[in-house]
Amino acid sequence: MSSTRVCSWLVVLTCVAVLAGGCKSKSDVTVLKLAHSLDIEHPVHHALMFLAQRVKEKSNGKMRIDVYPTEQLGSERDCIEHVQLGILAMTKTSSGPMEGFVPALRVFGLPYLFRDSENMWKVFEGPIGKELLAAGERKGLKGLCFYDAGARSFYTTHKQIETPADLAGLKIRVLKSEMSMRMIQAMGGSPTPIDWGELYTALQQGVVDGAENNPPSYYTSRHYEITRYFSLDEHLRLPDMLVISPRIWKQLSPENQKVLTEAVAESVTYQRQLWEKMERKALTEVEKAGVIVTRPDKKPFRDKVQSLWAEFEGTEVGELAKRIQATE
Image 1: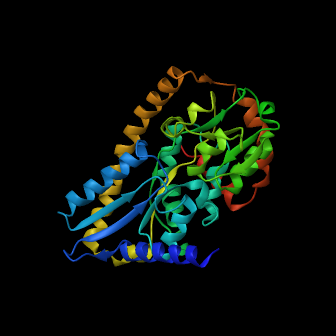
Image 2: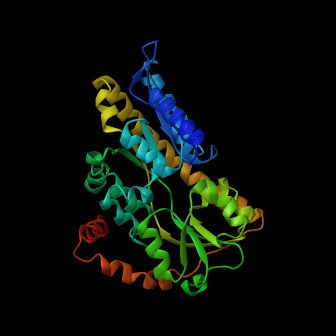
Image 3: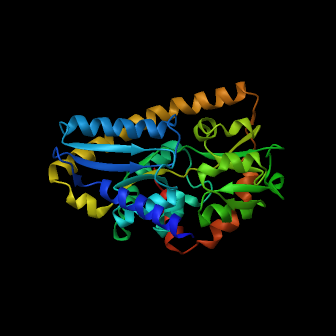
């Protein structure tokens, strides 16, 4: 790396550090910087803007959250690392990239883990969810909540995915997650980790043959302009997570901690409502745009990934999976 580029990055990191959360401005307002990778039309971004508004209102303007979308402050992994270092207050990330920092979160990478959305939310809002949010605190990543990220399905450029056999020979973009890569391998595809912000170009240039994500992300990213086949096999329900630097959390007054906790809970309710509406809209709009949407039989996909489940028998992830599936 050239000395000029190194200096540029040092300037950026210094600026981020100066602006990081927990700092008092001249007007005695506590400012928290929150970064994420999603488009501004995404329902999770809208929920984060709602969170920022509620924090401002509930604190009577004494605390503020500044939201930076679309990878303005780095990729998901970059932002996670910045939170660990305390140079960024908060980030919204998929649980996939969090696996490398909090191994217990690998449980969400087991395909077909949840029976349905209702089962998923009982887990998130119950004892298991609280355990998993707290699991990263020793790693500098205090979980505040889970957001709905729906079910992930395959979308491709040249052919529909009706069975796992259709994935053979295809390069499929995945999150930078060991579990996601192993899942694609188990189904017969070739996993290719690519940052979200680079995926549109990668699809356009044929670097990958497809990807997998939820309907709102598929729609708001405009990936449907390139990939004309969407197969709703719903193999994963990876939640989004909101995390904060424990160091910055401890710098907040008890009053501000209370304000933030309450506002986060309100944003979860708001986001769930937005998500449900956006899922319906996304599928309607991509079909209008000419995308062929199918709902393949899920059994062959479930059968194909049983080898991945077997690997975790008797492990922490395996035991967590059993507890999740026993949740009523």
